[in-house]
Length: 133
Image 1: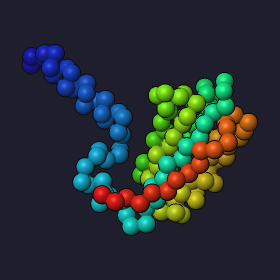
Image 2 (image 1 turned 90 degrees about the horizontal axis):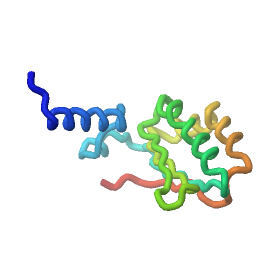
Image 3 (image 1 turned 180 degrees about the vertical axis):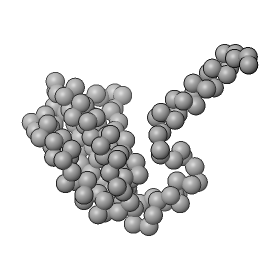
Image 4 (image 1 turned 135 degrees about the vertical axis):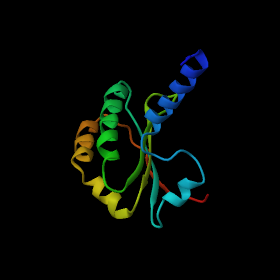
């Protein structure tokens, strides 16, 4: 079997997409139908205090893996602003309000709250959304 540069690049791209997306659906028509009626979609934003960006990022990143394993978690992605490294944002999709409430009481959520004490600025917050299309 001949393996050329194009084969390697195509294969590498496929692996990268699989690694990034994991078990989540890629953007397509099927995403809307995959969310059940009553699903919760939200964005949670927060800002680290000056000099606390690394500690806040570490505490938030520790949430990702255990949260993605929670029942009812469809999507849980952490983002950091390209322009202002003190700004962080979670994009989340949950099967129900009950699943989100359970997440709020999880041990890793409580650990994160402790780790963030005194390290974040006022503001930020949570915004809930309806999926339109």
